[in-house]
Image (tube, rainbow, N blue to C red):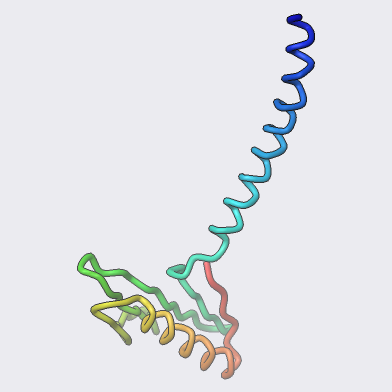
Length: 104
C-alpha cells in the first residue's frame, strides 16, 4: 500500500514543481518596469537625469539634473501621476532633440 501511495503522490509533486517555476516567472514580469526608475538622457558630451521622488505625506517631486545641478521641475501634493507625466514630456523633448534616453 505504501508503494501505491508513493506512486499517487509523485505526479502531484511534479505538478507543484512546474507551478512553482511559473509563479517565479509571473512575479518577474510584474517588477520589470519601475515607474519611479531613474531616466538618464545622454549625448556624446553630456548627461541629464530625471528622478521621481515620493513624499512621505503623499505626492511627488520630479528632479532634473543638468550640468551637475539638481532642480525640482514638477511636483504634486496628492499623486505621483503629474510627475510621471512631466518626466515623459521632458524625455520626449530631449529625444526629439537627439538625446538618447533610457530608464534604469
